[in-house]
Each structure stands twice: as C-alpha cells, then as structure tokens.
Length: 329
Image 1: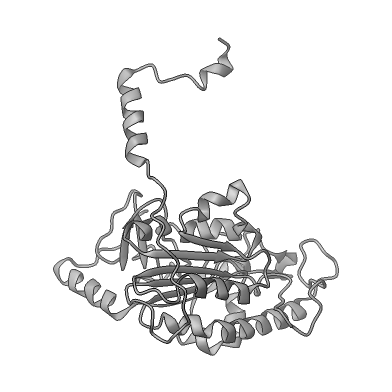
Image 2: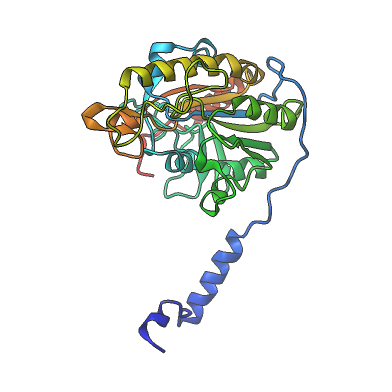
C-alpha cells in the first residue's frame, strides 16, 4: 500500500478506535423536530416573550444606519458601532449562528461585546458560561440549540450565500424547521410573507431569522426609482460612484424599516437583535464592496433588546455569582 493510502488508515490502537466511535456516537443527532407551521397575522407583542428575532441587514454600513436612523429599527435599543466577525456574508453568519454577534471589543460590558457576555451562547467551545450570557444552548448552532429547547424555528435568507441548493450552504441553514431562500436581494415582501405563513400565529416560543438583501449591492428595492441593473459599487470597476452608493443604501434602509415594522412589533416583548453582517467599502483606500479586510467592511450597526424577564433572570444569577472578566473563547 502506497504512502497516500496511509492518510485514510484506521487508527492502530484499539483504544483510539473506541474513542473515535464514542465521539461519533455522542455527537450524532437525528433530524430536528419539525413543528408545524403556525400561520397568522403580525400583531404587536404577540410573540411569546421567550422568543428571539435575529435580523441581519446585509452589507449595511454603520455610517449608513447612523445617518438614516430608521425609526422602527432604532427603537429596538441604543446603536453601537460594532465590528463584524467576518468580511463576507457566509463567514459572518457562521459566527453569528455560533453566538458571536458583531461587537465592540473596547467596551467591557455584556452583549455589546460578545467576548464579555453573549446574548446567545452555544456550549462546546473552550470557555464556559460565567453567568453573563442571556441564553445558553447545547447544539451545533443556535438554531439547533433552539430546536432542542422546543422552539419553532424559521429562517429566510436573501443573499446568494443562503441558497440551500448549494452543498456549501446547507450546513448553515439545515437546522431550521422552516426555511426559505428568497432567490435574490430584493425579496423582502416574499420573506415577510413566508414568516407570516410559518410563525405569526405561534403560541410557543419562536426563533426567527431574516437576512435582508435590499441593503446589499446593487442597493435596490422593489419599485425603487432607479435602475437595478446599474450597480454603483463593483469590485475593480473604474466607473463606481460612492455618492450614489450612499444615497441608494440610505434609501433602501428607510424602505426596509417601513416594511419590517409589523415583524419588529410582533417581537416587542421578546429578545431582538439587529445588525449588519458586514459593510461595504465605497472607494476608501481604493477598495470597493466587501470580501476584503478593510475597516469600513468590518464596521457595522448593532442594536438589541433583551426581554425584561431574561434580564431579571440574569441579574438574579449574578447576585449569587459575580460576573467574571472575559477569557479566551
């Protein structure tokens, strides 16, 4: 047998084989428990207070959000200038689904700095929860963890990295009980309709996720008064337009804010996170769009609202165990 075949050889030690088999058995999980869809209409405060809503504004720059201050989204909580966990959609969402939301590492406080305390922690890394995490789950991702807790889970993505026909994408979204890939980045109406048909009438706790695509290039929404096919932000192009990129993303953000208001209102008693997954470069240092490690690509808005009863539970646990400084995770 040649050297190349050795890379696939079984471990020589019987003990090693037992340990590998034990790990495989321990980590095996069957399909997520599929709860039936709960169609309904959005009503303010209607979602179970244990629920959680996660909204990612794809490619939304922090300075865009700061300039527009969209009223519905801004009412969720204070706006933080955060650093995204990656410079492109797939990388950031892998991190977010592992509990690493965008954060400001200079602020030594939970939630705005996930290193100090997470809104959702998935157990399994080298660090354990010290009592300063809001929700602690077991599972491969937060979606899997919520499934195990008996939540109804539904998600929808707009950017191409959410196309579950691709093998590289499936492991990111496969745990959702109900899932829709919208097909393009200007499908918010279709996405909101999907969530209405799957969770709006739920009485049990829900984890809902929506990746909003209108803030992604080409910065267009259905009915926008400019040409969708004229993209003002193209990598390596010599005809890009920073002012037009800014104008369009601002307009898209305002439009999204109005459309998403009923969904945000339905989760008003629940935990809600809104953030950019990454930003875009608009000519800074000669860079355009994303997928590159540039400060403007990593700078994103972060807003969150923690359900009051969850904060009370966190405060109760903190009185018996002081919040410890963050350590490496």
